Amino acid sequence: MRRTAGSKRIRGLVAVAMLAAMLTSSVRPVLAEDDENRFASDFGFGVAAFFTNLIYMPTKFVYATLGGITGGFAYVLTGFKYEVARTIWVPSTGGDYVVTPSMLRGDDPIIFSGTTEPKHERFRRHEEDLGAPSSESTPRGPVKY
Image (cartoon, rainbow, N blue to C red; front, top):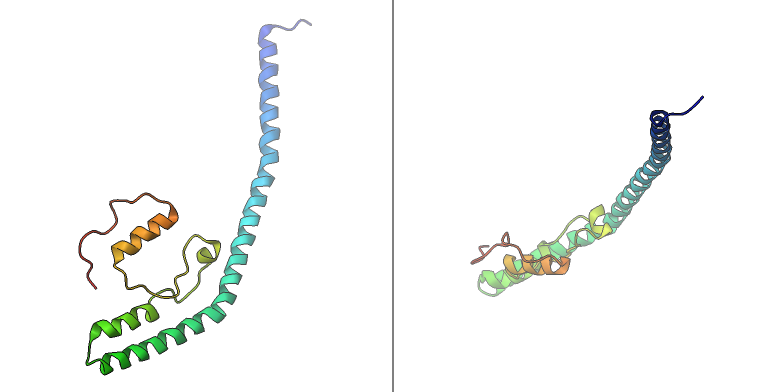
C-alpha cells in the first residue's frame, strides 16, 4: 500500500496531537503540586501569624494603654496643650494591632508605633521603600488631623 502526501500529513497531525496530550497530562500534576505547596505555605503563615499575635497583641495593647495614660498626664500637666499629648498618643496608639500573614510574608510592613509625620511624607517614603515611582495618587497639600 502506497502512502500519499495526505496520509503523511494526517499521521503527522496525529503524532503532534498525541505529543501535546502527553505533555499537558504531565504538567497537570505539577500544577496541582504547586497549589498544594501554596496551600501549605499559606497555612504555615496563618499559624505563624496566630502564634505571633499571642505575644504581639498583648504587648501592643499594654504599650497603647500606657501611652494613652501617659499622654493624658502630659495633657493635664502641661496646661491642656494638645500638641504635647498628641506626640505621645499618636506613636503609642497608632500602628498595627494585629500581625497578618501578609506581614510575615513581607508583603506589608509591620508598624508597631504610629508616626507623627504628615501623611503625604509617610506615603512617599513607603513608595520609596517599595521601589515604586512616585505617583499622582499621593496626597498633596496641607495635612488635616
